[in-house]
Structures are given as C-alpha cells and as structure tokens.
Image (cartoon, rainbow, N blue to C red; front, side):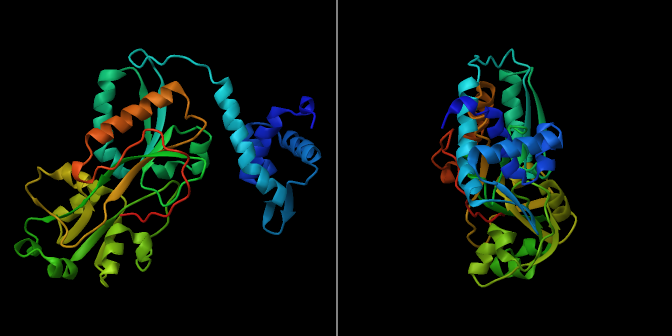
Amino acid sequence: MNLHGVDLNLMVALNVLLREKSVTRAAEFLGITQPAMSNALKRLRQLFDDPLLVRTSEGMKPTERAQALEPHVRDLLIQVEQVVQPINKFTPDKSEHFYRIAVSDYGESALMPLVLARLREAAPHISIDIMAPSDVKAHDVEQGFVDFVINRFDELPQSFYQTLLWRDNFTCVYAKDNPIANCFNYETYMSAQHIWVSKTGMGVGVGVNPDDVQRLGWVDAALHKLGEKRHVNVFTRHYQAALQMAEVSELIVTLPTKAAQLQKHNPNLVFTPPPFTIPALELTMAWSPLLHFNPAHQWLRRLVADVAHEHADPNIRPHYEHYAAPALDKSVIQP
C-alpha cells in the first residue's frame, strides 16, 4: 500500500466510528459536521475496500473486517500519541496542572484525604476535580478526558492500564445499644437485619436485585458458599450514610475495614470482625493508554500508588507494580 495517500485523521475517525457505531455521534464527539464524518467514512471504505459499518435493524454494525481492524487502529493511535508527546520535565512544586479523577465513595473517604495531604506538601498549586464513577463512562477514561478511576471493577476494557492499590478486610459495625452487642456470633449475625453498601465500576448504576447473590458482592457470596443468605433491609451506595444508619437503628453494616475506621472514635458504635471468612476486596486504579506516558499523569499515579501502598494492611499486602500491563477483562464481585 502507498502510505503517501493515507490520512492519519482517517484513523482517528475510524476509531471513533467503531466505538460509537453512529456517524452522528462520532461527528458530535470529534466536533465536526455529519457530512464531514460521512465523507470520512466514504474514504475509509475506499481505503479498506470494505463497508466497515453496515445498517441493520439494530443500528449500525461493524463488519468482520472492521472488528479485526479495531484493536490495530487503537494501538496505532496510542503509538502515535507516544511519538508526538513532548518530553517535558514535570515540576510538581511549580505546576498548576488540573487533574480529573473519578473515585468511589469508599476510595474518596479512605484514600483521598491521605493523597491530598501528600499533595499539599509536594504540589500545592495543582487542582483536582474529584468525580463519582457514575459521572463518567469508560470511553471518557479511554479518551483521556478523565485521568484515572479508583474503584473496584467487575471488568475493565482491554486497552486500560491498571494497578492494585490495596486489599482490605471487612468489619461489622452496629450501635452499642443494639441487642446483638450482648452476644455477637454467627447465629445472631444471621438472625439480624442488615445494610448493604456498594457501588463498583463506571457509569450510572441500576437498582439492586436482592436475589442476584454474585452481583451483591463479597459478603453475600461468602455467605452463599455457606448455604446462607442474610436479611438485607436497606441498600445504599454510601459508606458514611450506612454508618450513620447503623448508629440509629438495630441494623448491622458489614463494610471494608478502612471505611469502618472513619468512625472508629464514635462511642456509639461497636466494631467487630465478621463471624465468618470474607475474601479481601481490591481497590484498583485504572487509566487510559493515551495518558500512560504523560509526565504529569505518571507523577500523580506514582504519588497515589505510593500513598496507598504505605497505608495498606501488611497482613494482606499484595505485590505491587506501578504500571501493570493493559488489563484483560475480568470478573470480580463487589462488596
């Protein structure tokens, strides 16, 4: 093939078209007119001698050739980004860089105060927009509009990088005047009423299905292996709210220990290890390969990872790597 006639902008257009599967949405994403995007698709079809996207009753669908091209186009754009990325030394104490980070309620409460304390010392002029994972979609992260996401994930796009920040055990929390405080054991735990709390991944969440044990998470999956099912009366996505509800009711909340420790000085609450084994949860940081070699991004990733590793439980500390290889899709149940 004569590369002289190949326009790199066509590869950008193809990447967006294959992701959005819509000429209109692709045009809106790139900030061009719909006729301009239609013309780009026409040129792409001529270049590859394939329709690439075909109209069906379910909308535009990629052809077999397009599906084969997609990972190669994505890798090509990543490599181009690396080549043209200016090599500028990042000076954190003088930088006014603006970061956009999506962090779960658990991560925001347990990790971000530690990170911000370190940032005040190392980079006092930078700014951070802390967003909820429900505020962003995977393609926002993939395109670098969000620097990274800190959460627990059921799955991640294959193109994403990720690193494990820490593992955490679980703690049961209940009011000191809760009748269960006089005799807390497996039997009384199972006879009590509970608060469920969790939110993983990215994007707007959906309502909980109490019968979907695997989707309910670590706690309920562990009980399921024992042939048991607890009585959950309240479902919430916020750890602080769950702790407040436990304080004023006879409900028990079983949540990650680092989240429970946020109220460790509250005299109205009792903190007890679960009366059965629950596998440790994992808090992960994920980011786009488009930002992987960006000096400012690399610096903040290292800082976040260093702070998390310093405060990890030494009894369940994993082997850490700052820059893991691009993640394969994986299924991980949430707490």
